[in-house]
Amino acid sequence: MKRLIQTVCLISFVLVINLPAHAAKGKKDKRPNIIFILLDNVGKDWFRCYGSEENQTPNIDHLAYTGLRFRNCYVTPVCSTTRHMLLTGRYPFRSGWHTHHDPAIYGGGYFDWNREICFARILRDAGYDTCISGKWQINDLFDPKQKNALTQHGFQEYCIFPEGKKGHPAHKKRYWDPYVIQNGKRLDTKGKFGPDIFTDYLIEYMKTHRDRPFCAYYSAILTHIPVVHTPHNLGEELTAREKFAGMLNYSDHLIGRLVKAMDELGIRDNTILFIVPDNGTDNGTDQNAEQSLGGRINGRISGEGIYSLKEQGINMPLIVNCPQLVGTERISDDLIDVSDILPTLADLAKAPLPEGVTIDGRSFAPQILNQPLKQTRRPWCLTQYYKQRVVRDQRFKLYSSGEFYDLSEDPLEQHDLTGSKLMQKDLISLGSYAQLKRVLDSLPENSKLPWEFRSISARKIRAEEARQKATEEAAPTQ
Image (cartoon, rainbow, N blue to C red):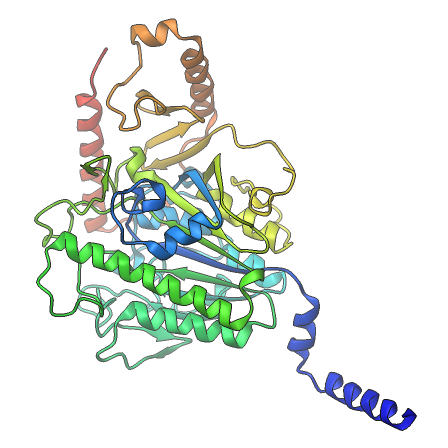
């Protein structure tokens, strides 16, 4: 018996010392895995868990009903400004990235790792494995100066649609036969659907990195225009809106695949999954869309989305799910904006924030983990596009141009309260107006743009200035 015990102990010792170093370390590091999914160009109007009458997101709805969903998460009204704010934890006026810019298409400046710090770099330096799958549009990866941008920003591995200038083989090739680069090598994608490639990559990544804490940033290409058929509806005669619905449904299908893979790998209870879109639904910039692409809420198809600072353009779903760490269904009215993502991920990863950098966001990790708050809840959240800023509290919303709305009574922002008799008699609205006005007045001017616009972008800026001026002139007076 003694000899048997000695033999068993010897075998156990040999097995332990021959374990790969990363596996042995991984078993000791109990920090959660993080999967952050950023959907593209789709707002609350399409999510049943947020009141939509559509039914294209059963997997996402299930995650919402079995996890935590926030009612008020602010993004910016267009893709690149949201992404920069999310990745850096800094407000657009501070970073200078307050206007849409796609370096791969327009040229000029880019997301500069010497100027800003990405959350991937923070988690990588804290011992996390990091990767990105999907799209990347805030660097031109075909520019020799930027070709290593992803690793400079902290992503150790990647599988991405890089976008390219007009005339380049990568230009707009995101869906069928897409242009995809994986860890420096272009893939053969003939006959393949881009979203499938990016999801397959993430599943394989989870298989090979499940023994250590990892952070996977899934920057989805769905549901960005142009509207297309998916593998689930090829050959069907569909309107543009039906194609868009199919694209969202396929995105939901892929998220279901990811969750199933997490279950099969045994990492579900220690993997925190985030889902948030980058801005509201694109309601008609697709030339093939003969009708609005908006979803239906309360019998009405949404008419406001991308580029709009109304709630439909900037107040997005935020769903967080992890059976063990987040728990069962909870709904939060806490105010969140996407600058909060960086400090939250750092908090969950027990990673220190960078020194000498102003981070505007604040961690909502305690709300995720259902723990006592480390600081008071946000009294207000903010977003902006170009020179127009907007700040809100739990009930009221104030634009830097002066419009003031009671969102509890007027969620579509049809009745500006500024100067109204109702507001003059209501101490609550007067108090909120004064407080929000002080917030706006306390904010600094926009930092200098981190790029020089080329002519095509300059025209966009002038058009945006004209659009905002016309909007301000058309605003109703009381």
